[in-house]
Amino acid sequence: MSQENKKSVENGPQPSALSPQPLQRVITLHGVCKVYGVGEAVVRAVDGINLHIQQGELVLILGPSGAGKTTLLSLVGGLLRPTAGEVRVTDKDLSRLTPKALAEFRLHQIGFVFQFFQLFSALTARENVEVPLRLAGIPPAEARRQAEALLAQFGLRKRSSHCPQGLSGGEKQRVALARALALHPPVIIADEPTGSLDSRNGEEVIRLLRQLADNERRTVLVASHDQRLTQIATRIVHCEDGRLIE
Amino acid sequence: MFLLARKNLLVHTSRFLLAIAGISSAVILVLLLMGLYDGWREHMSAYLDHVRTDVWIGQKGAYDLFQTLSLLPSEGEALLREADGVKKVSPFVGRLMTVEVRGQKRHSFIVGVADADSGPVEVVSGSEVLNDGEIIIDEVFALKERLTVGDSVKVRDDSLRVIGIARGGNCFLYQYAFVTLAQAKQLFGMDGWVNYFLVQLAPDVQVGEAITQIEETSPLVSAFPKAQFTANNLSLTGDNFLPILRVLEVIGLLVGTLVIGLTVSTLTTERSAEYGVLKAVGASNWTLYWTAVQQAVVCGLCGWCSGVPASWGVIAIARYFVPQFPAVASPQHALWMLGGTVAMSLLAAVLPIRRIARIDPLLAFKG
Image (tube, rainbow over all chains, first blue to last red; front, side, top):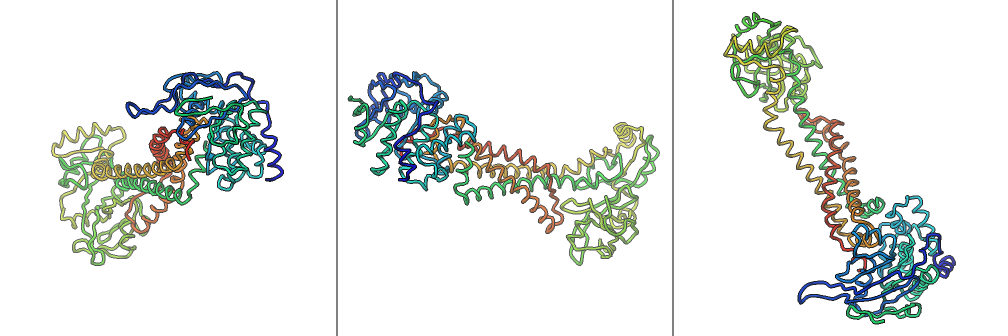
């Protein structure tokens, strides 16, 4: 790892004036159900979940495949609407938001980190980070400056003009993290963030997630099988058959 | 999101270039047809516009030079001269004839020129003063048959020497040629007859009133204002052939729309996971629709930019090899086509937009 990388990973992203303001309860799920299908084919992916997450918490959701972890993340991230119950994130009742307001909510309130990075293959690392900035209406020159600055914080200044194909798995996930943090969202949702990484890069990402919660007081919700995450999580919940066991 | 729209388009350069080639072909086809449409009308009417007359007078029921037959006795000229408000009357004799060029039978619409009022639009080479035994041919006919001033052609049994080459007489299927009135009457066997009379009115006379008076005085004739008579002649093509060109233009536009639609649609399908990610990270549906529209418009405009000069090249080449090809290259058509291209692009964007609307943002969680 380069000297620049080491320093950045150890320090994590620097807090800025745009960091989220203190909030007590950031995520509240009350009696949330998500049902797919009808009749005998009905699947209760999430079944009556109650969950409260405070600002600065790093909550790890553990559970086998098909337990409902991704559905839960999607409900909190405003990608799915619950069949029943209430999902409140940063004091917004997501069920009441219009599709446009939901998109706006995801843009400004949620930072997504995916297992397979999901970078835009035709864009460079910098341009990938620019995407949410441009979506938020930030002028191109300013978006470029902010993206460069973010990539530098993640030790990727020299890799900013590379396309995803030219980046290692760890670099890709750091670009994805930079993209997730571009608009300083108060909530980070990560689905198997270490799932496609080797152990060293996985540890880097784990450290970064912890710093986001500890240093920047962001609320981090992680679904993972990775046992290393249990050591840094402030709370661990187990998901089984659509239910949570804390 | 123009950046992503543009970069995704250029990921597969060869496919993008193929799409541009397809759109260019559609643009070329439509511009060629538009050029043909306008060129046809322009060429068809050029000579009739040039003929100096206010009113065409023909046999009752005849209304044009090509589809209907008009025969009037030459004495009618004297009668018309006596009518109130008539300044000048000229006979018009013309017929489609077989012209033999180096033993090959060709066709030309031969006009008997009484005076400059019914002569060629403009003589571009040789002389415009006709004598019996001489003919002025159209430049398209000359090019097509490789005739020059001094050559001879045969009409019926008479050998006519080419003394001039004129322009403005190309009707695509045939071209006008000019001989003396006496020569024409002799060739057509029309001694004592004419096809039409050309009537010029005094400046203070209304054309409509004069026509009413002429038709009342002579119930066996039909009289037409010049513009009406020109329109009658254009109706042969206007009613039958030109609508076909319009249909082909629409087909060209549809082909262009399909090429754009398929290109952007394929791209959307290939990149559906990325669209899912965009939705997940907060892009509104309208932003994504706009991305598809941008891609479609970029494809369309690239096709237009390459298609317009290419169409002008194709017209120039076609006119070189097929002189009677009446298509014109017009900047106005190019501007129309620009509007057409934008319309094609917007229409083509509907398909990918429908796809985008159905893309599930949860795709972002999948590999």
